[in-house]
Length: 79
Image 1 (tube, one colour):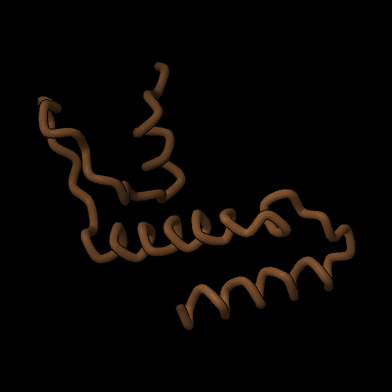
Image 2 (image 1 turned 45 degrees about the vertical axis):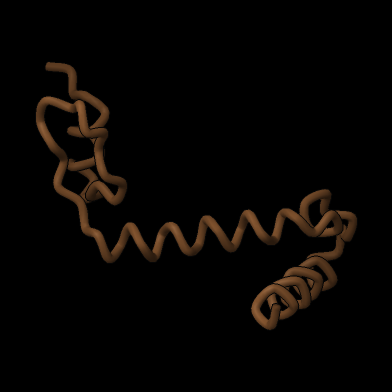
């Protein structure tokens, strides 16, 4: 018996976090609060990628790269 993608995820204990499309025959239950939190994180990563230094990862040293991310996040938060 072959499992579909959603059945494989359910076997691993992963629940849907994104709402299904309106035209879908069988609606998928999802957690609205979790989806909202996930969306916030995606938006933050998108804003971080606007900073060229972070997106291109000019800094190869992990400490310097993390400090660039922290600085960018701080500026984004205050603006």
